[in-house]
Length: 340
Image (cartoon, rainbow, N blue to C red):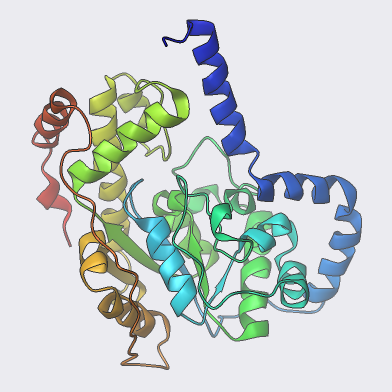
């Protein structure tokens, strides 16, 4: 049965609302409106008299890359296997007060050893309250929602103090690195390095055509149209916005990765890592060990033995016409120029 245009519009609106009103976001809003003064006071007790300007013993670690690069799965695996802090769906609810949030999580939430690798375009609530959350709202406390590319020049003193306090105190309290997966971070490496000089970054790469097909599908699934921009906006966004959808998608991937690799060239080798989605699927244990050694400088040669039954998604996932068009545009860019 063919749907009327009006009904189609309603379905698209429902899809958008469903994404915005995921349970952690709903509860976070309720908490913010109801008990934020109490949580503000509790948080102040944590930070009173603490100096967050000194170098941290552990480092925040940021997973970065283009959309649909396998970053959520990678984040979930690392959160399952490594002894790190991360913002769970539970902590997401209290993300304005991370020090309080981790205390509440330890008291109220019985976390599993491993959470399933289920997600929907970055959302992991189906995996459980203890599963890792991207929690964009935490960064939006002091960063713009629409402007994704930021440099150290955009950093305010208030933002610097909020982020350092929120991240460094839990790391000190629990003696663990702090793992983040927020893909906008790849366009904010200079900004984040100004906040956290000790920060480390892991760039996950994937076959460009596979990512492009998945972004095309995301546009259609979420907005009902390939013509609506979805996910990260590189600094060349305005230029790309004038192009047709397929050129937008390939340009989006290209400029996001270009910026990441440009910023990586200014990082010390000990603070950067590049790995591939395909290699992760082929041998997750080797990748987990490699990341463990990268994150935990005091613990080297870590060994893991897990079986997630991973298989890299490849091949054609869209119409032949769309597939050919994406391939054609990919070949207009010089991707190897930006390899480290």
